[in-house]
Image (cartoon, rainbow, N blue to C red; front, side, top):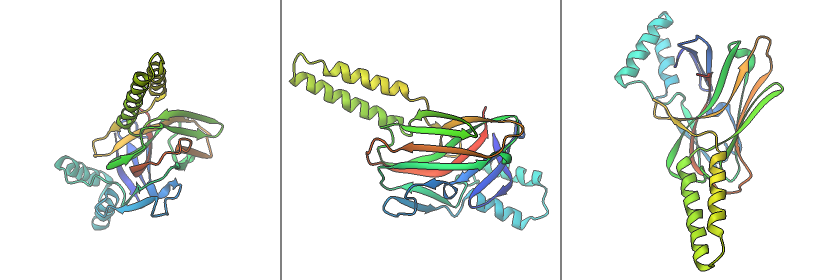
Amino acid sequence: MSLEIDSCSSLQSFSLDRSSGAKCYMLSARELFITWADTPQYWMWDCLPESRCVVISHIYSVFPHWHAKCITQLIDYMIVDGNFPRGRFAEVAELIDVCWLEIRGKIESRMLSRKTTYAAYLIFRISDVSQGLGYPPQEASVKVGGHSSTKTVCLQPSDMLSHMHARRASALFGYCVRCRRLMITAEAEEAAEETEEVDGAPQARNDDWMELELGEFYIDDGDDGEVNISLLEIKGGGWKKGLIIEGIEIRPKQ
């Protein structure tokens, strides 16, 4: 578990992991590279005026001489009391409609704690009107220097299951109207294979957001350069909508 106690801006927030003391960062949606993010017909920027960053900055401005521990205790009280804002930044990005989903983020490895295994997480929500976020699944990757890892993830598993059920129903219909053709078997096997290939699914957080692990990496002594993180779905060609992005969080792997 981590908590912002040192700094917070409109582009990123900094915190310390409570168990290890390792540095944690959150890159806001504005800090990320999102293809067509500034094109209103594809993406929309929603304002969250009562974000955590705004509240924390206000506390520091009102009580500039307070010790960080005092501010931490105040924020703890606000969390327990249910009065601490759920959003961390003043803006979030909402996907209106795209067929090319490309989200990238980066951070200098020197900003992170040494000899620590980190994981990168996309922090997001799914709106009530969503489409194409479960199938095809997405490709997530993390690259540090010459080391990289890539895996298949799914932003909306329920949507993927609906897609698989629809394919199976279509296969069953095809079997009924074309007797002796084993379409249903082939479709069911293909659907099962695609489901098994997904090795990352969202988890609920205690701040009303979801998180999806994009990959993990290790920061060793002497590591320099950038940590590059990405989430892509650019091969399927289907239209997608309803994804709301708060940012990418980088924290020690538990």
